Length: 284
Image (cartoon, rainbow, N blue to C red; front, side):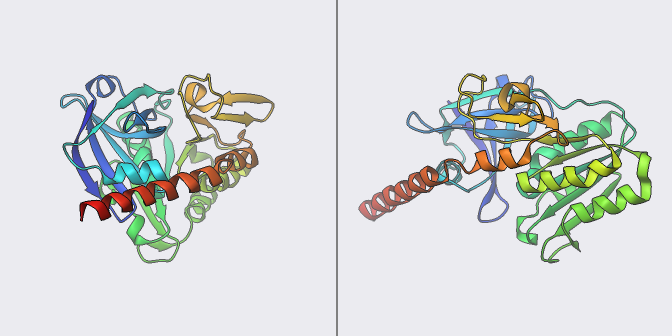
């Protein structure tokens, strides 16, 4: 069992949990993820490691409630436990001193971009970070990102905080202004955001790394659920990723596969909500 030792609510749907998982914390690196299972009947879902504390033996997970399992996870409190936390999984980010780099976090993707930006800064890079969300409500860790960045641009779609823009707008301006000075770009967020970040950087021929959070079951490459297409080859996110060259990803394939079980996910959420309401009514 893995005990929840801290819970923080960023907004109604985005929450942070710090979980006691010494074996994961002892070897976790920026860019890696875990697969968690809440209880014996629960599904296994991947969550990127947003931070880790080796001394305390804890990992930090930030998630958005979008389906049955993440909504169930959001109801847990400090002292509750998870049945399983498998990891760290996936290849860590390739951290080197590249020079000037750009880190982009969109929505809940701000959480996993943080340890990457921190590691890149520690390696001696000049870090320009861009974070964005639909509204101010969905922005978090601005101070954390500022602490590991030489420059920070904050955007919201509606202009409620920072600049009114999509993250691709300041990115394009930076690329047009600094050109070859930018050596590499990292982007984590909704798949559609990462797609357009990659399209923005492609004309400048700047290596662009994206972190894919596909449907995943076993995390060993056996189930095939996380299969993606990279130009002329097939890869599995759990064992070959989660980071890939954004210019090689078949984004239409990724976006299509992300919604392949949409109807089943809707039904699972409806059943869980009905069960939860019944339990509440009985206990009232």
